[in-house]
Figure (cartoon, helix red, strand yellow):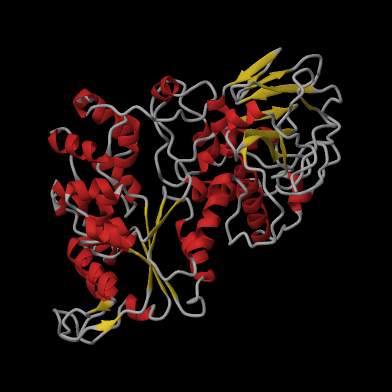
Length: 554
């Protein structure tokens, strides 16, 4: 049953909004944090009064619940704001005589403000009197469900879609390719599939292909016979054998070496594996789940990934949404991680504290700033931020942003470069360029227009790589070119170095002088972090005591 504050849409509105998504308000922050995640659907047929927003209305409840309650905070006025739905799918907010101070995406609204359908689809952050934070977004009316959340936090339409796809494919013994940006929870999805599949009583083995040296990848996956190569003093089973009867999760599948791709293809096609140095084949008897944040099609075009392997891996694909597309889930995720971190600190009930002076333990302004951020590192980055805030606020009466978070959220007003996210990933762009590229909402504009590579100058290419700290994926998105086109631009540009071009002595010297810190090495050598990490593994620098790493030449 849909929440009783919902009014069914007119035929015109249904045609404008589509059959499944409707405007909604979801609580991102509230003096009672238990209410975070509650929502009210905003389908209104009364063009005169609209949907009234105040201390007393509308009613908010858990998605799918049949009953709800108003916001109820005494600091909000009883005199309502009003939201009017336009026939084209947009909304207009009237402040009217209400003394409630309302801001949309950080800008105080005086009089009225119109929200386009594109803004609502992207999501708008509303702040009410610095006490309550709401997300204005599109949601799917949902029925009450007793099904498990599968370990995934969130109720956004995109997450509900992922849950449906997990349930549809879990009991089928077909390979699944999980695609999504870094930090979106690809391994959580893989574990959820394993938990629901007939193999759930057997092993779940997770392997990060990017962490295995290319020369050892075949032996690590398929095992090795004694004497197969120098150093193989005994036979050893691989990950396929360890996962026999269960599930093998291959993360970062795009980093699989070409020769191992051939072996994986045979394992998928024939269900057989062959240990390195052995003449005998064995049945693999594993279910393969794979994940990547790479553009595999671009890698196929570049010749570094095999098309038949992609076709075999993608027996079924699940695409994970980035956090910036899940505005209504940010409050739910924030409270989830907040409770976890406080529990680890031995303060499990502190998140419920009500202060006598009326101030909030979780400042609404802090949550609003987090909701407006783009989260290039997605859920993993949000978790790291919450940990930073909780630890940095120990002993304080309320959560404080701290210098590290301020650096993350505040762009350099002088345009001197982009702050580095807590994940070690770049914030997308410097202040001046980002301000030019963004709509006034502060949230990312859809990147629908691709540029021709010939339009990108060398200066622009170098500047984008520097701003993105040599992350090729981020630079390609910034320049609005495909990853394949960016690779070609880099190859032609004499001013850009690649990790593969660096002499071992130079890498060793930087490793020693940077104390093994890869992020510092990226800034010093100005090359891709992923490619540099691969060179470090190939040179086995991490296996040496730091003092024994050669200093190189000067």
